[in-house]
Structure formats: C-alpha cells, structure tokens
Image 1 (cartoon, rainbow, N blue to C red):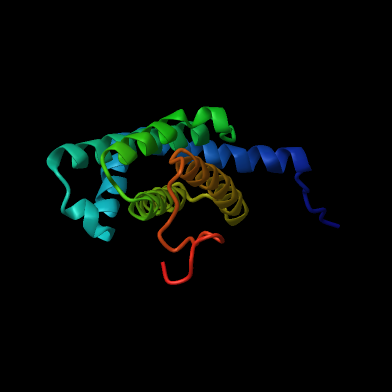
Image 2: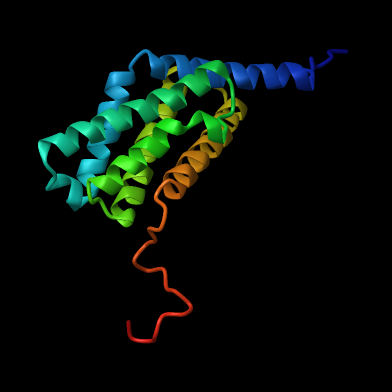
Length: 174
C-alpha cells in the first residue's frame, strides 16, 4: 500500500517563505526597472503627475525606487515590515506636502505604484513557477506590507484630509 508523504507545517511554512524570498531577490536584482515601472504607473494614471515639473518627476522616480527597494528587501529577507522600517515612505509624503501635491493625488500615486509592485511580484512568481499555496502566501505577505506603506503614507501628511472627508462641525453647504 502506497503512503502519501505529508509535509510538516513547519516545512510547508519554510517552503512558502522561501518562495517569498526568491521573488524578493528577483525584484531586488531589477530594482531600477521596478522603480521605473512604479513611477510610470503613477504618471500614466494621475493627470497631476503628467503635468508635473521634471524635478517632481525625478523625485517620483526616486520615491518609487526607494519604496520598491524597501518592499523587495523585506521580501528577500522574509521579514514583515514594521512602522519603524518605512521612514522612506513618510519622507516621500513630507516632500509631496511641500511640493503641493494633494492628498488624493498622493494616495492615488501610492496605490498605483503598489499595484505596479504587485504586478512585478506576480510576474516573478509566474516566472519562478511558484506553487499556488506559496503564491497565496506571497499575496498575503504583499498585502500586509502594502497596507503598512499606504497607512504610513497617509499618516505622514498631518492635517491633510481627502476632499471628500467632511467635518462634523462644518456648516452645511460648505
């Protein structure tokens, strides 16, 4: 009678984490390309950035590259990002405030860039033939990291709220 080999939970977790690390290392190997893809997605999706100065566009590329490198490094090391790990994101947010980029455009830019990052992750997972279960783990890992990045980006813009946010004490019609 044939017996099925069962992988222990610890071994299965190690395989899943190994897949995350492989994808992270592959992304790190092409971090300039990744940063350009993230910055391009921002410019494609958001009119404000298409009309921006060359200096702002260069800064968008620098911020996207730094964010991509941060995420890819966390993946390559197999570590979950923490608040204290994402100072680069808060710094980009502070620069955008001084560059008069609206909170809506800034948040949209981060979402666009992070979707480009995810597309690169999925592409690498496919290229590396990452198994389904490990791909799902990669997706959870990515979503947690991306959630932290977007939260920190929003929190780093003190006193700024989306235009759709309404103050309870504001007179109606304003």
